[in-house]
Image (cartoon, rainbow, N blue to C red; front, side, top):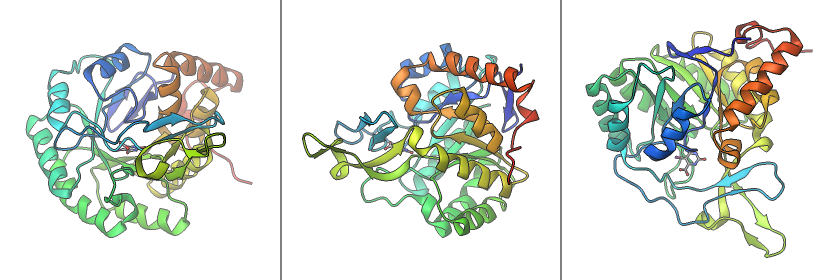
Length: 312
Ligand SMILES: O=C(O)c1[nH]c(=O)[nH]c(=O)c1I
């Protein structure tokens, strides 16, 4: 069976890659991604300057085994590190490169985009509208007017095809409003749904304490528990953005959830919590599981069932 796919005009040998933030902050992390069986890789969201991020413990798998909580606080090497990585990347390799940018201000996003546009590299830019864990900074993804204003500035500046990373939405009116904004920008060619479900709280029963240190224990939720919210966001935007693509992320622990993401409309699928817990061998495992599922169901390619979720 054929697991290959195309996103933003680039060919991926298979549809799986890392969720931004996991296994992608340093060159050592990114090398592991390059050597893995992933079909692509995306860098940790970059800010203009280097950031240490929030105090630890700031990421933990949940005792329930159903997911994870994180309040990393945008730790990253600073955008020039990732620009340099992108300049040295081997674009003749099978794996396309995605670059995530998450400026602390529109001005910072403009400066970072200008630098990448000037470098004129084959990598695809993804603007993260949904970084949830920088204290005092409301995430853009929930401010529709600010999101449109940012796109009015960034889309013309980037010129080439680019994507945005979105928080989960939970109200049909928000899907409608957000999609209407995205449909105004032709070179916004994909959306990545979902970022973590913001500001959950994990409390330890024995110690009666929050699990993570930052923000009184409040942090973004990931893993199996967010699967159904992720599938809804993938399908909501798949239905509302007919000329664009959706990258699905959220709740992938096996080939089964990847299959569901593609049924919901995903062109590619990212793995976060399960990659963090299992390591990059997860891509070989899940590619095999998806292959077995497609054989069992009689599908030869992803196109045969992408977006074909039935309704009753
Ligand atoms: O806290 C983080 O660094 C972080 N954590 C997330 O769960 N999503 C994000 O987009 C980011 I920028």
